[in-house]
Length: 461
Ligand code: F0G
Image (tube, rainbow, N blue to C red; front, top):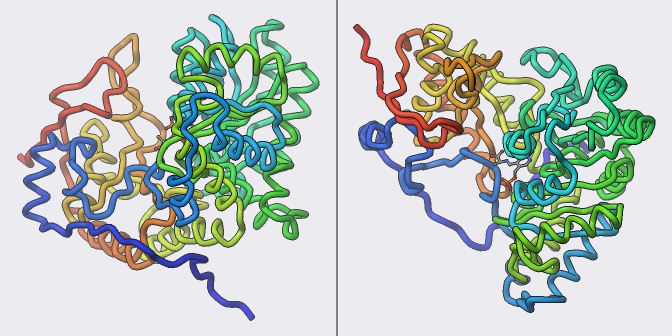
């Protein structure tokens, strides 16, 4: 029997969301200086700004909130979490942190020095930020297929082994402290990395004596793609696949706000005792004592349960196929989206959607604003505003792609919400030829301008 998937959970508590009118939203977005980050949540109907920390916890996770052990040292909740991390990743050493970027901060404080080069697959912003902050360079070795939105490749997050080996061979010894592999690759559109690629990256790293670390924020979604797309893994359980993925690496950083199924949290897990010992010093300085590192006992308990739940096939099937459901509806309506669909988000291709809006008028942002006005949907621009200006010329850096990311929170919205989102986008798509003008920036911060930028609408002359 070939039955459709159905969510392996039911609803025990609901949170009301407030519908609003187009007139109200036009006013609110103007008051927010056309920056979606400035909207307060009650003005948003469906919030797709991020899938980070915005999901729903299970009853078992909430149960852990009541029995959390808040001891400063040696908390039972810490031990519970340590057991799960060890069982799922195979790494012996573990340090909790308050979120993913904190894990990067602690680990990179140990590993990176000025002038270093850190190869990887399209490093996430905070990863790149923590590398550049230490006057080091993030070297992107992602395969070329990743940058073409309409080419089909099952593992667009893969590293180009030749590019990586070339960097390892030609760089002065000691200047590459490690390689970082992000699974799934958020910056490349939530695209997975194959087991074969992880294995090959690991082999090249070993050949040159360089450790491999995994940015594991969406490791479970990556494992799901391996199971359904990679030959030889059909009959493996998700937990077997994740264990194998990590077996090729020396350690990991984790933003538990994604595949940890919690609202806040993160950790570092390691194989090497020496690196662990050095990292504990920074963990204590920046995060907290090594048995809580920035997390409450109750939050560590909820994360322990979340990691187990996130690595179950039924949950992942619902999760990834819900995202794909939205993608398929949009493709059916002829809307240009990045394919194959990512694990956590659908990306609208604004260069193809609204080519009529000039690039220097921020077409992806203009599209994101339209989504909000038409349907109360909050998305995020991944285009020229995010790419920011060249630090030397102070001119806009126009990235190859102008995207609008629709990130889907875990276990939060229904298929009807997906249908609603697709219908709103279809309406906008049908009237796209009327879109001629975009926005101009009236105020921007020196760096990371997208969070606080102020915009004004350019009125058609
Ligand atoms: N690595 C990846 C791949 C991420 O996507 C993120 C966060 C981080 C690290 C940092 O983790 O937020 O817990 O400090 N991504 C969020 C997003 C913010 O919206 O994609 P964090």
